[in-house]
Image 1 (cartoon, one colour):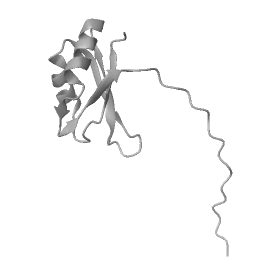
Image 2: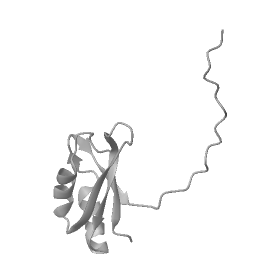
Image 3: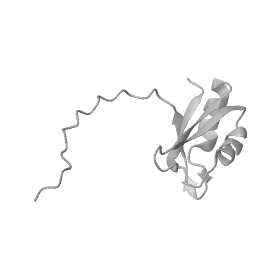
Image 4: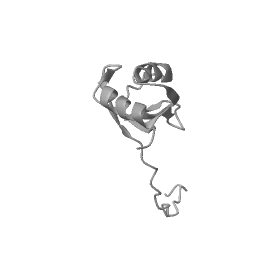
Length: 99
């Protein structure tokens, strides 16, 4: 099992410090990141927490999956590598006004 965990269903107001505090109850947190929208800078409602050992990661899943933080019930599981998506072939859009 990997030590990096996916954390979903985060409140948009949850901070990385709040997330870290929750997971520190299960062991040593190596890193904590809430994913932000690149345009608005707001939380996208999910993040990643990396625990120091596999045992701590397993304990964190057991302790934090279904736990409430910021009024939301969290989803916690092992993070999987990001799947490569094929590049979209965007059709050319003509933005000139048409009369």
